[in-house]
Length: 429
Ligand code: IMP
Image (cartoon, rainbow, N blue to C red; front, side):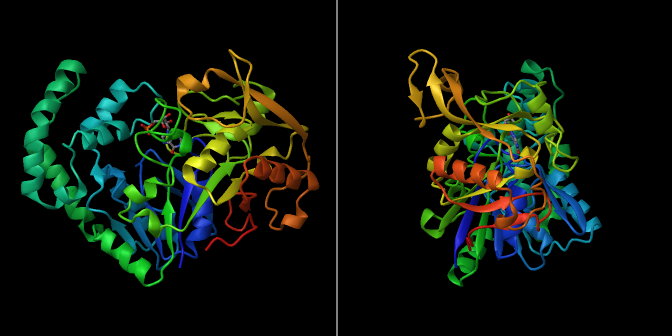
């Protein structure tokens, strides 16, 4: 039975949650492998609209095991609120499992993130939590279950942290006893969900269960492969599924990349195919209905918008080893007379035209300008279309052209926020 990894092909917000939700039905395990509450997903079902940050949206299906994996970072009070919100909507959380290895975001991480941000972060403490992990002084979920472990770590961390907070950032200090009591209490609340996720996954794999690895953010926000330094601090690419779950590469069978039919970005950093914020096209791309509007689920910030960039998509296909693509939000393009596609980059110095990039670091990307090709818009409704044959010819041509340029077959085309608003072109599981 296959294991599939879903990752974002662009700068996050590609609509991964919708695709994950669609495939979750066929999965037995769904695991988030990186990131934290910087991610935000909205899933629309008959029961209403659900917003997720840390918990895999597969929890909406009965009987699925939904894991918050070892590679993630968790702000406990935030997770507890997410759990409570779902319980209040009568969602059964018996399948929720939290890895004891996940890193814990402490209150000073959030304070420092807000005080030192240079990339337009989500302000959720993600960067400072991963920094602490890499410095080998981080608190992990298992610490919250053991007073000695947590006290030992806090005794080492807090004096230095308080000094930094006070002297460098002019921020309030934290008292060890108070932090200890608060975080042990979080441990108590989360205890029923903290589980041996590594053995659970491996047993699942051995007994033929389907496993879905759910990436957050996207390829171009990857700490190594993204538009560095305008990136997040984790590994959203498909390979992150291994380091963030406890399963090696031979346990993952296929990789699906999710792309919007255009591009968006929140936060700072280069965006070669970006449209000028107030241009008619940008406003049109952004104003496509309340549920789908281009504002971040996590921060409510306005997303920057632009045309589909095949150069970056070709790069994403490689660094994720994508077998399939899922395209989302085709309906957003319904009203356009003309649709542009970034088909190549031109080097600003040499005039050289390239289709393949060796890397996508911010400084390097700024040396190029996009080369666009335009196609005629279909000017017909695709919203909610559920059959490929019922799509306008020009819409089919647009999708086929993108698929051809990025040399990857399309498995799913999403035509709206509802589960059913989907065209399945290949069965991945
Ligand atoms: P951080 O992950 O909060 O440290 O933010 C780093 C960069 O990643 C910023 O530009 C954020 O806007 C961006 N980012 C983080 N999470 C998401 C996401 O889920 N969707 C889109 N952008 C994100």
